[in-house]
Length: 405
View 1 (tube, helix red, strand yellow):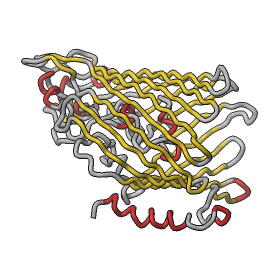
View 2 (view 1 turned 135 degrees about the vertical axis):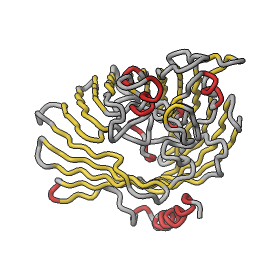
View 3 (view 1 turned 90 degrees about the vertical axis):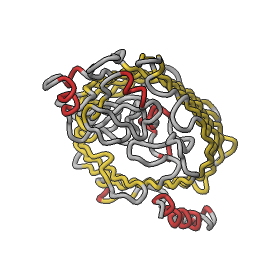
View 4 (view 1 turned 45 degrees about the vertical axis):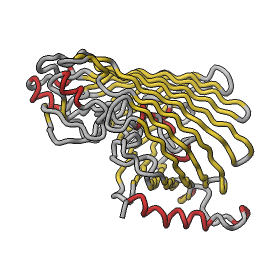
């Protein structure tokens, strides 16, 4: 049986539980608290239905489609004292084995100041949407392209020439190269929304400014639990709230991208630190009355080993822009839309000059209805267009049930 179809019993159970009047809700609606507030347990479940995606437009770095997925999160926060807490999030996708999405200790040196230090598999530092990756926070069912769409780049396998990279144009779901691991495998997005990185993060906030900085094992496109190249990524984000309803954000990150094994095959030992991913981001959110508008732009540069002609023009660059909005029609009912694009820099092969990966555009429209406060039914329609790959255009309709407590 296709894994996402196993979600059907859960969906039926959720809908059945809401068939009673709102005053007699049978599903839990608040986190479960133990020990006078010392232990808090919450959860998030989302089941999505859609036709098959033969173009792999919605494929993620865990090799599932965002439109055909059962995702269950179980979160826990244990407060040891006023200065130390432990937080964890176990996640399962399509009835797979649970994995630690988040697992870190939070240290607050001063209880009267908004400053904390987080150690372990920590929340994302880079970007705005990275903080809204739970289905309950996403207006639609699909994800912004920058955080989900797989490019043809891999950290463990690199092209020997521009010609070899061009042959994988639009094939991020299954790319293969001659340097490093030659097994066909998926590429990476500009920024991963499905894996958190491991390291140390410092966060401070005031009424108008929110600042975060981190040092982690991987990069924004390839977060890691165990470092694979002895290098560290440094990332930072600033968010400003000059007036009520307006948030202005800026992010930056830089770290070694190519694995030690791939760099050794390409140019020898001790050089992997030269092959980096550098990313910049800017975002704006404005909310007022019944509507919210968000804009986010990300620029990412990758530097790879140059082995033979025709040479790769470095850095390889990708540029994404996403514009989305939500309008509340009435209590419990809203409409939403997102327009998205990723473009890529050009390189020259043996006979042609073209973008190193195929540009992609996505338009998604839809909305949601609250069956109860923490149970939402979403519907959406998605149009995808790509200048390359095996399938150039794809239209998909999707439905999703989201429950959290």
